[in-house]
Length: 347
View (spheres, rainbow, N blue to C red):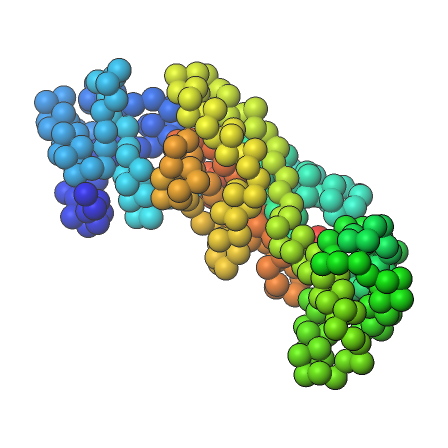
């Protein structure tokens, strides 16, 4: 059943709904009519409060766990609260200072990414996640070295001196001269370019029939480039810190959900794909529970925000993952602030 817009709730229903959600997000426990009647914000009898709670439950905004007389928000209720009622609390001066101090410590950018993930975990009480920026190194040389009749080693050298190797499966025996011709051809056209730029230029040249290579060497060129392109696409790097935070006291009552969440985190490829979907967002995006199929079983929430380099280009995504009772009002602005702070370090 679709949840109603916030405008359709009466003033008293809206206020009780807000108190239930905020109470649940604060304690992780269902909120009962006795707790609400003791609040100065509600001037209603317990019977009237129970009537409103029943109304909100009928609308699909609240649910009553079997083990408690209280109510807790459904995923639809959380979405309504986050989109229509939540008042975000900006990071405190101390939090901003702590984030900026940790990120400004000397060291390589990899150390800053590790620190970012740890900071998000420490402040949110959940697990912090950072997608490592996609590197587009400028290339200097690619060599194909024979290993066996049907395998070769592709050795890629970057302008920064970095060297990486990949094994290339060949369709059949390749002569040393064919491998050398393919290596020379690739190197002559990729020097000073990124892999994507070199691949596009060479594919266009091969398609236009402008290459002097024979068919066997053309095939080697294509395979030599493909092994790198496929590897880069399939290998997003995700740093996760603070998974132990997910094992708090409240989690002990729902250990199967936490086990499922930890399994999800082990599948970094799937989590990385979820974060990638936030690359085009202008600010933090919130994924609640089964809104994303990855967390349909674990009932977890993700708050993710892209971070940009100094030229405003999105280079990665960071965020936190935890139970749906995350303190969204506090965590969302922290994620956004951390994304802006990290972006200042990216060249």
